[in-house]
Length: 324
Image (cartoon, rainbow, N blue to C red):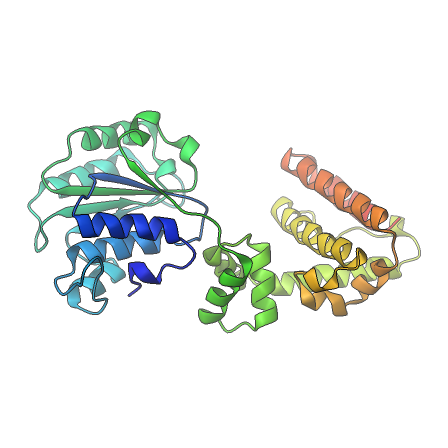
């Protein structure tokens, strides 16, 4: 069980929630807002455990009693978790279920709680139904909304929730979390932390998605293009939009590191493993402005692909952007 004090890199959010617990001034509605994978859901569980734990100390939970364990497992009878159905929408039926549960007398706690994960995925009907609950909370009810898209939520919902802001973590802190929760080495963890932008949750997902193998594949394709006499004979090989988009994101990161290395700042290169590749050796002698030109073209291609340019066209053009 993660305690509120265990949440890394979110000092302001943890401090604010801890002060709420110590003062006993608990709002009816909270909005945990911030990027994906930075600890919002963990903080929600820890906050609820600190409220409900029967063996808690000041402003915290014990982390090992039956109440804490059930909250951590998502099986506590007084806590309801709601999220999008099949990663699509949160419908009004789910909010009606929450209202019914919150209206009942709690089974074993002094209040009931509902956590709405990815709250921005609520339909308009669901949002309006939630607004009624926030306006007239039934009994001792607590609502926690979790979202990374504040702009998708109704202003009237926002106005009735206390916002608790979460942020991306520093790369080094993200790396330490990744190493603690996976079997990857320090170098790989550092790359994942950098590529995820400081989101431990996203970095750990990337391990499951085999991003490290994909990075090796991108480097291998780059080296084969470098060895070709004419890039006009080469196609990137991937024409599925999402796969091509991920390859472009990897290439942008790799060429940023090449630019940093060519500026004589090799100690600041984030992906240390890339330094030992033929790709890095090839571009090391390029003028820095030439590397930046490639980087700009890669970003332009990524934007074009986001704008629904034909992926096959991007796959044809990409090798000639990389090596001219």
